[in-house]
Image (cartoon, rainbow, N blue to C red; front, side, top):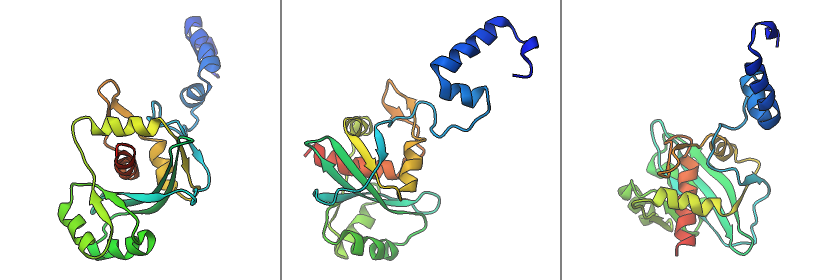
Length: 202
């Protein structure tokens, strides 16, 4: 704005068009403002709200340890109104099997948990300790298929689920045509996808 005399008119015209057609992008690129949401995010169909405890619910779980967090999300699916309710219950790295159990058992009780199948021994141990936990089913195209299922619903996130919100604001495509997302900002989302796919494909 303080350098207009040195800019080509064609560039100024393109910036003016951007100001009208893409005000968020204009604010970010031209005015140096922060973007709350990464460009090209996969999920835009969400908002904040209260969890609907009148619905049947279960849990989606993803495993991490040293760098990545283990996650647990409470999930209820309203098939009639096409709404998925999400409530973050765990998002923490470095947890042992016993620590996971001590967090998950009081929360989940006997509710169904669908977990990342990459840690079968961990799942077996938690099952033997008393959790109603089972491995997710993965296969060719299962990530894109699960994303499509979730995109077909309105996602309602509880206000305290700060890590889910952060992931939704930053989860983007690596190759949209191939249905391949960037393998970042997906720890809670993966766990949610496991449970949603299990229920909606059953």
